[in-house]
Length: 353
Image 1 (tube, rainbow, N blue to C red):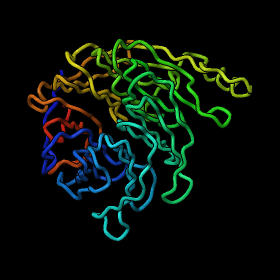
Image 2: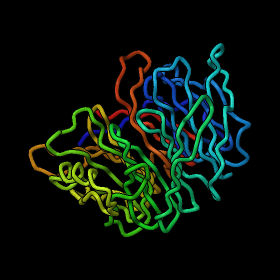
Image 3: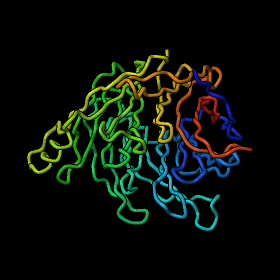
Image 4: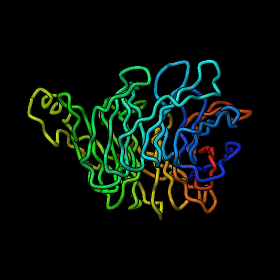
């Protein structure tokens, strides 16, 4: 079995619980949500570059970088104060950030925010059981295009498909829902059922290296300590294209099935899961402090195996979030690393060898 080796912690760590750390898609920087602020770290020096504060009254739970090739970065934040903030990097001083706009509408804590691949749509979800979709219609100007209220519990996570305008949401009601725009109206086109308790997070299989004969797949993790892989049923692409020609809307336009369950390794709630675009492995973390890496057996269809396990990644503290990224480790070359974020305020980088 491979080993998960500690590389370094980002310095300085936060003095309170850190909820998540999100690497920028193209720049060597990372944002960590802790307290009412965002901390921007360099993935080259592994040190703090900026602290963004002043926009939220309660803790920031989630953050997401806007995709695009702009010279300055933009990031969205979701807070326990029920608001969503959008921040932009100063064009003249990259260490300075401005609070561009606040998006109000949710009635309770915002748990997750996510940009579509094109960067024109922002999805948010909340303890109020709703998913909102916002569209950028001008500079610092956003309109609500959908309020989706079919979940029966706290919505924990939203995630956009890496290629399509297809949104996945995970909830306290044990369900995963998939949403598309059909005839100028957003609606639920599939409900993925199988988990026996709260679904905390989902992540799409990256496009790079994906088997085109398999099609889109989604990974989910839950309070029931399982990790499941979901895929669209065979032939759905043709039926989906045909259904879009009809003016009759269907509440189940797509059929998704559970393809596999990963080997059970965690003993407490699994809070976060991430699918690598480089190694195509999956990593999970949770309340038991374990970091677990899985790989798909290409020779045996639908079979996954545990590649590596690291116990007590943040000592006795729970690990709230995990992500894959690439970083230039001091004295070495750029390599794929795992980023974990914990209740101890630490953000740690790990290598799998």
